[in-house]
Image (cartoon, rainbow, N blue to C red; front, side, top):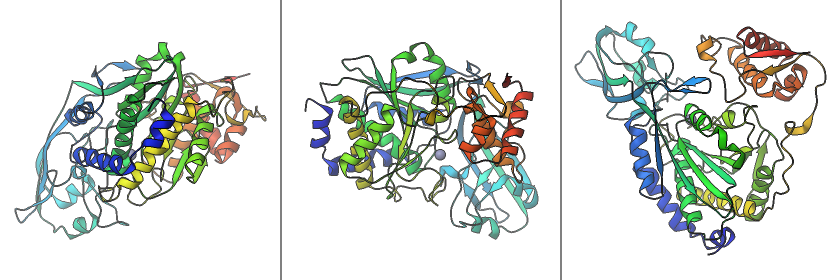
Length: 458
Ligand code: ZN
């Protein structure tokens, strides 16, 4: 197989599907988080298959507007009920412990414990996935049915975890091509015991790297990034800022093992070469593809496609995050993903690489005005003063505070305003493109300006 196209034709889908399921099954029980030994063990397993360079960035390192957090390693966590029996135990499922829980060992009444317990009343048999990376607390997640059955009385709560200075870990696999121009495949590696989000993405990325490594005639260099969500991509961008001129195309790989059809979220440009290559590739495979325009939240495209970097990065998935009931619950287990779906996803990525190699999506337009190229239709215009990656809004009291009606909409409006305030788009344009009420967009802009994140343009 001398070309990527030939590798696609020769792909043994049955064998690849089985191999991806094996990899996912091996990774499934590892307690991953933003940092810690779970990420290292995950990368160790990936490194058994593909050449991987592992990076450690110390706690406290400044990366763009963010700081590398302390390293978290859970050891034991359980709740012992009035009967003396453990009613919730981390040893049974990694989702039982809220990610980044601080240590605690106390006895408390159920009503005191209750605010630390998280469940899903609409899906009473499932364990939800919760984290608290940037606010020091502890908590447990459990099925609602179990929560409702807990009798009053005294509960012993034990969380043995270390949260201390250490480092954040990520891995990169670079497959050099005849050109230094790079294609980035980015997968997050921070989810504990969840299969579709995100082991399916890791499994497809690893097998894509294996398949491409076996192709001698590759024009592009391919870089595979396995990093914790948000802060990992931010750190990578911060460390690679001076070499981004070789960046050509990027895809975020996640949600690739469920039974749904393919979905593509376009880059911020909308019609960049990568966007056209994905469409051409899926059509070539005879696969249906639903496409959606860029929006500034989701996975790490929110970092890559921030206005300062504005890299052409799309998200090729099956069912997108948040749009299947198993998402971020214990039902996203190994039975939710399948070998056939994974193999189809691998073929889709390989076909996209083949399309890029053959320049099926070319020529790329110059990197100017965002998708649609629509200019200001009037109204105030701003410039984002922290355009490289997402500014950390939580630290400024703008994000993740108390919920309430309209709060989520306000947060999303801030992300839109930050992403689109490149001098080209007015608040009217942003309201129109996002579909958000102009009043909310205006409020978001006011809050961001007060926080020093925006300047108004004449
Ligand atoms: Zn997720």
